[in-house]
Image (cartoon, rainbow, N blue to C red; front, top):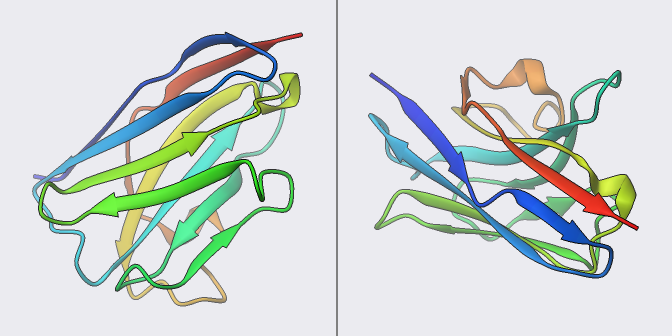
Length: 126
């Protein structure tokens, strides 16, 4: 059975940093698209960062580019999101997602992923 479990969320002031972690069991990251999405209250779930299979191709949403860094440790089956220079608009529930055969066109859409964590809340105060 597949499980993705996020951790590392919390409350920080603007300009601060957090590192989110996603621990996977029941699957191996190799060959999978891995992604972080976020959803603020009353808004749709949007992609934040995606890493393609192999780990060499990474995409960032414009809103986080230069501030967030996605990384993975295949040996530990862990996915990370380092978030720096946090802004109040980064406040959201953050989810990790994974799946095979997503493709670069569909990798920015939440419906392309079948495996999700339960989410971890990030709150940034001004």
